[in-house]
Image 1 (cartoon, rainbow, N blue to C red):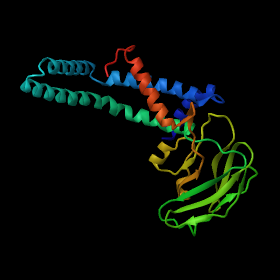
Image 2 (tube, helix red, strand yellow):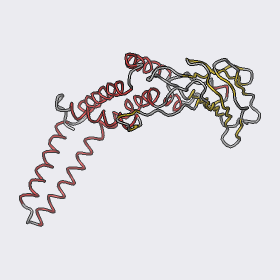
Image 3 (tube, one colour):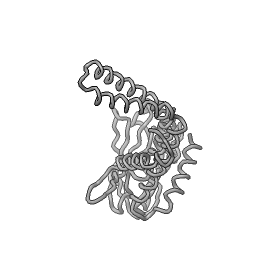
Length: 275
């Protein structure tokens, strides 16, 4: 998974490089357009286009039949049954392309969350640093500490939570820039990225994952913690970001799905795709 993450990170870094410092809506429009095109092509290549067209025509015929023979109870019942059956067939035609889309769309969403999901900390802003321990480790016994640095200030001692297997500190960001939070785990060193200030659009890595496959899939922006350290993750709790339009604040996921669907339906006729 490390190679896949590295390739995807590079692709999205290059894609968004021209938009750094610009309004994030510009980048969202471009990536939504590209995602809409990707979904259109996947749908065209993996679906039964003739079957979809035939099923849609049958539905239209049944609807016309309902209008023409609305006074005939028997014909109306048969027409409703035919419409229901055709709708089931239509859903069946859509299942295969949707199944194929799941993996690429999931990987895209994970990448977009790194760019649009959070905002960098401001200089002087406090934040939480959380280290989650692997099963079987005792937070009261683990020798885990934050290494002092000019980039941040440790405001509170470690809060060790037995039930959550978690150790938490409150830190304060100091200078703007890209920094590393140093940690010592049983006399071994570990770092976690920290973003303070910077441009409107930038990749952030809230979580440094453990060695699990799923953790690495959903947290691709930073190398995983070594497995033998006994850590499930190390997290910097960044504030959530929102896209703003006409005074309304949108979650990026809502904006992405709406725009990609709009672009997809707008372009389906151009590429002669039956949906």
